[in-house]
Image: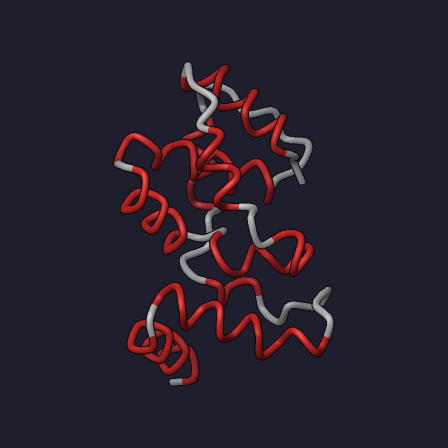
Length: 130
């Protein structure tokens, strides 16, 4: 997993701007949930949320951040677009948050409801069961 400095450097190199606010936003749940923080914003819905909150010009930075976290050791260059398919659609593609303290399961579920809204969360989770 890349840290804030690495994310900033990758965006600076590939996009000409660090986009620090994007990386801080995507990782702001890390102190609370550790590796399981990715379930909240590290997917296509999270990219859409970043874009809505910070502007269309931040979409690519959010995508790069997620790819860099999910593919450690892969050197991203101008062909990074080839890895966009690695970005999960929703939090469900991460499976169970294995590294999460059991006491935080309900808290994480509530975070998803607070961020995405009950209708969207229920639609996504119901669709998985069908």
